[in-house]
Amino acid sequence: MPGHLETLLAFDRQYQRDQQQSPVFLHRRDRRYALDSGEGQAPDIARWLTQLHAIGSHTADRPDFPEIRFWRRFSTGFITAGALLGVITMSGLLFYEGGQQINVTVILGFVLLQLLLALYTAVQGLAGWQPWAPVIHGLQQRLQKQQPSPALAPLLGPMMTRTAQAAGLVFGATALITLLLSVVFQDLAFGWSTTLETSAEAWHRVVSWVALPWSGWLPVASPSLELAEDTRFFRLEGSEAGTASARWGEWWPFVAMTWLAWVILPRALLLAVATVDLRAKGRSALTQHPGYQALLWRMETPSVDTGADTSDSGQLPEDHRSATVTVPHAPLAVSWAGATADGLLAGVDRPLPRAGGAQSLQADRDTLAQLAEQMTAGHRQLVVVTRSWEPPTAELEDFLEDAREQLPGVTITLLPVAGDPAQRPNDQQLGQWLRFAERVGQGVRVAVAETQEATHGVH
Image 1 (cartoon, helix red, strand yellow):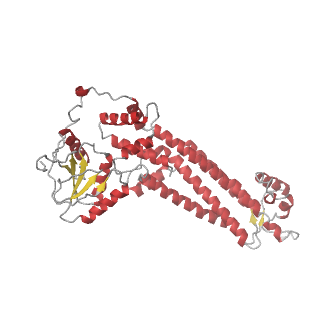
Image 2: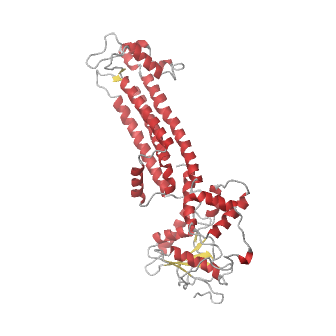
Image 3: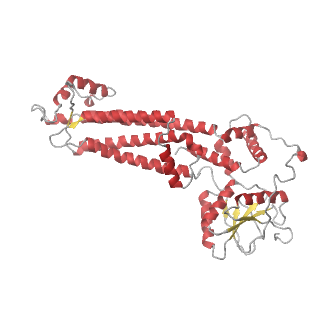
């Protein structure tokens, strides 16, 4: 899928995470980014997300979104079905019995149908109609076991249109290949027939209009009046005695060029239109996202700090109800974003496996897989060493959720460490980790441990 959809989903995911943060923290964070990037410039959402993810476990260049995976699988299946249907359809159109010619009239009617379907699909996408939304939502919920992201709701119509046009293009291409192969390996006999009282001159005017785009430079694919007169047939009558057998095969260049010009090329052009329209509506969905205007305000509005008189100076923004616990003995341990715990973890080998920071999502999963191999029935304690002065991130929360899934039954203990491991983090730093533990503790079983200056123990 286009990268702008991944940017939209990443922004929406970050917006949902930011709802758990203090407005003061968000204002200072985003205002700092705006000052570093330069005043008066529109925010580069991709760069902003890259900066936020730099200290986390997710990288901006390889996001992992269930919605993107679903649409890739859906598009692949839809396009594959279009390719198979193209082969089957052309084989059916070219099927004929010994004395029955392949009716060019039927092929032209089918080409007209394909052209109308392509135009209808294009109008549907440009207008934003979503007739297939309930079916796609139901399929997405069944495969993902969760609700699809609301950020993609206004883009469902353009996304489906782009997929349908791509499938139609592949349908036309495989059908044309089938036609050309049939011409090479079979003796095809084309003709034209209709129940209406149509003269050869009138039919020749119709096919001449159809062949107008290439008649000037490819006359062999523009049937003559004589060919139209010689190759008309009737269902209950045989061909005229004076018609040479080779004349019945002279229609194939016209049929091939008609399919190329009126089925494949319109689909290719409309696929390009659908792609441009999807990108434009994707950018519009991003700028209309409820978090976008709030982000602009935070970037453009100075963060006022009056020193000790500020309401959040020297105190926690809210109380926490939990208390610190003791550090487990000989636990499984992991270093988050490069944090160190020299001498603080008894019975733990060094160096600790790493997670977060500059590591990729796959590297974090490999770390959890390594810890899962070390976990035993009586060894289900995991300590995550963090830097106490850095605020807990949403990426860390995602890592803890992954740990819960890959290490079933594990008890997770956060160990925020000060710059000097011999010193105890201050109360404000511990407070943010205690509040973080309370927020993610349901179903994750997270506690917070603190170091002490003298004994490196905990209380």
